[in-house]
Length: 349
Length: 248
Image (cartoon, rainbow over all chains, first blue to last red; front, side):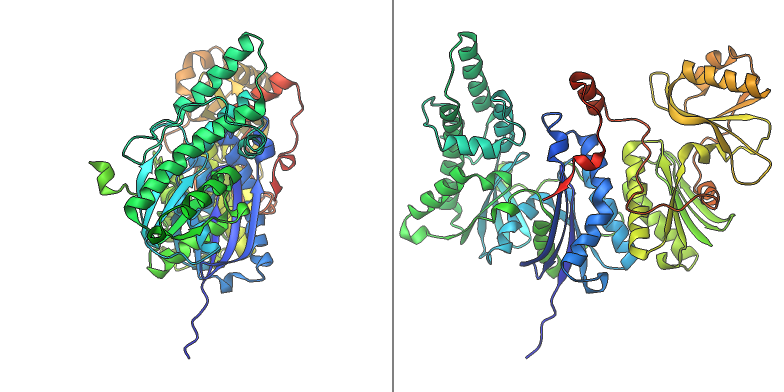
């Protein structure tokens, strides 16, 4: 029997307010994961301040690199590739990871792989279970709301996208109105479970044929309802407000995703991104998929909760697939703040 | 001692290889706005031309600030990682000291500055001493309005009987009228002197204490606007950055 050599990747992620490093074996096994979060810092400002984020990233970058290696009980000699998120994200923040990964590659001679952050989020699923292709992913976070078709482990196409706010962004904005500290998703999710959908907020674009989303109108409807009540000294039930908001978000996400599953008939359904940790959304998607006709049943992979947010392990997982196809970067690799997965041809018409 | 030094603090990307005080090679890309894509290839080029590997470098040096915040972080992150992985010395050198080091004049106040817009400058003033340790700082690096800077210059010159000032760096020529009012003879740096040179950073690092790569951070000289606004609004004290970042 030929012994297949293990492939170990050291990955960096610094696209927003988490600085993270990880050693991932064979794209499936997390041997170490270090996440330094700056949430406490940005809570002072009510949201992520890019310059502050960049300053924090550089403070920890060398330490967490050493920690990722030592926690995995490996040295640079055991590493086959160095991977880094090069976009999308905050450019100054991305540049810390990119500069660090390139310097590490130069200092060690280990090849470099640039990874799309969104591809990384989706590949958090690969750390839980093997993905059967084609697959369909619902990617929902503070920066993105997309339905992505995975033709194979490295060829992804966007089939639906938000036209304005990302779902997670809408959570943070209505959270601010309710006095919930950023990031608001977790608290709103908890409140939603204690309330009822009594406000009947708009479900934007739910009937449109395409797979696009819009959450800006919902956010405005919520804020108007809240402020109007305030003006007439009426106290609204925050649990019902949260439940109504969350129901509107989830209704649209679930309806459009199920419709996309019916059209594309993937073998696997994946969720990724910070909002993939939302219990309401996870339960609803599981339920909807159970209700699909027998011949459309598919594998469902919802990543572990701690791998839904930004982390380097997911970057290591995605990088393994790129490694297998020899897709390496060189020293000219640069941060690309507005990097996008390609859009499916039908979306470009 | 082989020193690899670089500056990504300003539009001029500069990388140099020194053997002790001797500059073996220095490469500059003037008006370069993409340091991230160009720094590593430039380092690679210098190493290859000199048949060296990074592991053969004894010390890494970098312009630590002031300068473009994003630019500084590219250079500082790069040398932090080099030094941390290869277990080599690393030293951060003031961008302004490196600018001043391009002027050899003695008995002259060398005002080094970087235009920070709206008549503000990241600036400091230096004098060359008899020794060869590089220019000594006499007005500390800081963020100054031009009027504040010029009164500090005038005061220093009066107290130390200096009758010649050189303004080196960026954005000083537009202050010519204001500078004239100090009534001290002055000149501006040449085009070559007005950019930060990697080779001079390498020279200055010979007399600098090496830093711990984990602790080496850009010297921004200014808090972020968000923090300044937060401090004003809440009256809360600034805490060390380590209070805000935690491993989870």
